[in-house]
Image 1 (cartoon, one colour):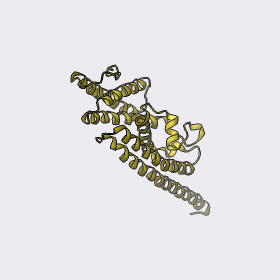
Image 2: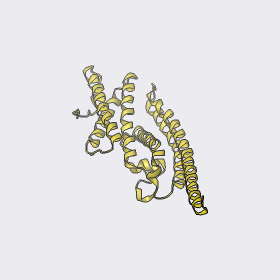
Image 3: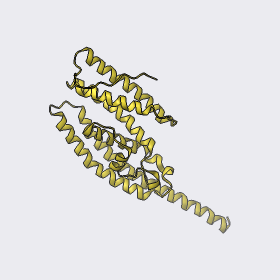
Image 4: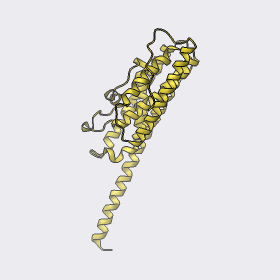
Length: 235
């Protein structure tokens, strides 16, 4: 092998080594993000347990989740430093699932706190990334939407357990929220296959929560002072 050719292949090896080291560094940081996400999820899953002072207990869960999001922000800041500028989407697959999970957790926390749909800007702030791509390491729109779809499924589960625990107000409130969320998604022309597939599950979440509310109504358990969401047609 000539010296010139050896230099060429040595440069290739240096590139491959640096690439491998970078991906490993990203992987370690993402693992820390995922670890904190599991801790937040474990705390918020307690909403499904029966509590006599439910509103007080839920607020405590949210407060603890808020504390743990500080670790999430710290590790996303590290990730932003590691990933080279203008190469976000080259490595995006390594943190995509973790980010979707944290969008869901942030959205769930905000809903439990004030019963509204969280904005993309707020989620970006909660997890510690930029909202817009031009500003740097950011929250991808499709990751945010996937998080909202996960939120819908979790809230329907919450509605089922609320009925079991004797809370008949919450399922009606959740039904209205999920119905409005579904109406919002119906405005989108979804091209992404995974996002479209996940959205199909939302339509069944809507159907399930409508059945829960209908069952409460025919049993005479639906609260009179809670506004019910209008039924939606399945596509």
